[in-house]
Amino acid sequence: MTGDTIPGARPASRDEADARAARRRPRREPREQERRFLFSPWHLVLIPLAVVMLVPMVWMLVTSLETLNETRHFPPVLLPHTLAPGNYAQVLQQAPFARWFMNTLIVTVVTVAGNLLLCAMAGYAFARIKFFGREVVFILVLATLMIPFQVVMIPTFIIVKHLGLINTLGGLIVPNLAQAFGIFLFRQFFRTLPVELEEAARIDGASRIGVLFRIVLPLSGPVLATVAVITFLYTWNDFLWPLITIYSPDNMTLQLGLTTFEGTHQTVTNLLMAANVMSLLPVVLLFFLAQRYFIRGIASTGLKG
Image (tube, rainbow, N blue to C red; front, top):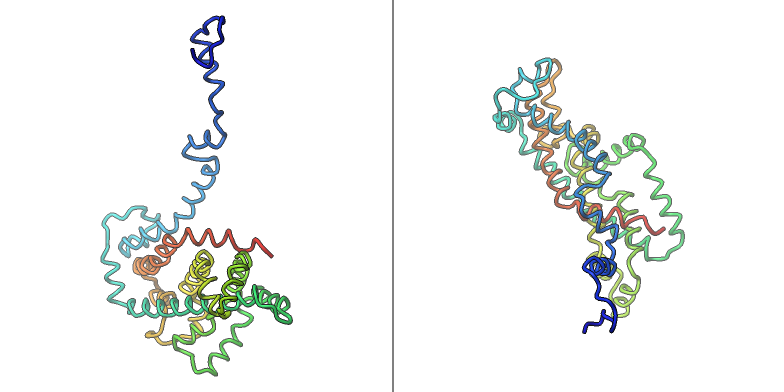
């Protein structure tokens, strides 16, 4: 005798038994039903937008594999009749592309390292150390974000000139060693961390610098990746400041060197696009490697005032 049968009762039919079993089954949650579908309704909007944003990159790649005559053809050639991968080798032969690449890499890496160090220290001071006028100073730092670079371009150039850094890589690095946006991101993220961890380290005799480098920064992977990616993209693609600071071809960065493919009367479009593709590869690679931490850092900062 089972626990479901009652003495003297009529045996249940197969349909009644199936109905009872269906009632006993746990109801499927809406989220479980949504998991059946591979796409959400948002993909109907996001996929066309992604395609539109990818069109210029695909066009740049196609143009880099065309001959010069095909790039000047009207209507434009959607698919090259013959691929010309030699355009990339020609770029390396006609211009010191490797030198420009190394200059850009040195400036970018040093600038990223400087921002991670200085912005982290400044952000920790604003988040944890109480001093007179802390909030006022922080507001003044944020206020610099509203000042266009064109306003401070001439004063910055005069300062760099007095330091003797014109036409040097140092002139590209020093003005960008710390950014107000990086200080803001670090300060907001540090305020979300529990203070008890730092207090325990302070009781054990750790200094403020020791707490920052041994306790706080190891827990700050998302914001470190966010600041690193933003600074890398800004420095790698910067054109205006190198344009007014560098005049020697040996010290040019990639973005400044690409202008040499544009002449007064004609532009070598296929070589220019090939150089653009090569200069874009490190940026795309970095974003794919750090996108998870980048999105997490953006989502976790700015939540606590």
